[in-house]
Image 1 (tube, one colour):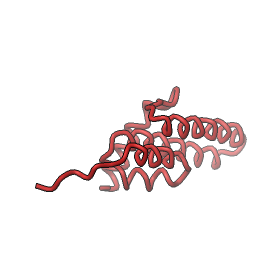
Image 2 (tube, one colour):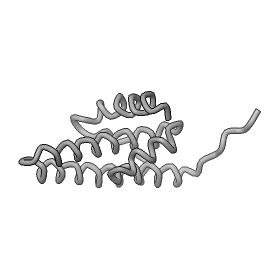
Image 3 (cartoon, one colour):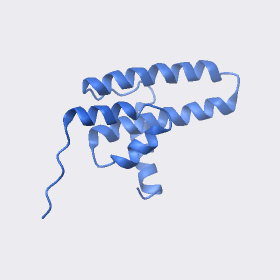
Image 4 (cartoon, helix red, strand yellow):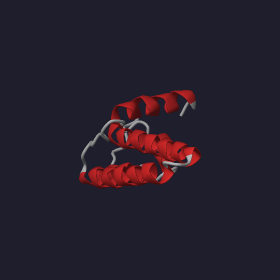
Amino acid sequence: MAEAKKVNPSEKKVWAAASYLWILSLVVLAARKNNDYVRFHASQGVLLFVISILAFLTGPFMVIVNLVVAVAAIFGIIKALQGDKWEIPVIGGWAKGLGNWIIKTLKL
């Protein structure tokens, strides 16, 4: 039986932090879907990415929504690098479902 690859804790933190960088969140979610810590942050990053795209398409509130998304992403990066599982207020619960849906739908 093959041994599971050991992952350096600081490597997990860097992957988790990178997942808050807009479209990179999808790459991180696909690449590290089996790591619970990285998957948690990547799912939140994907949700922020989707919200940012939707805000861009809606127009009037685009600046305000994207500013809130940017602040949430910065907090997410900081918390990921600290090793914390910080759930984004209000929308954090939806992130897990979205991440699971993406992985199942795209068969990642």
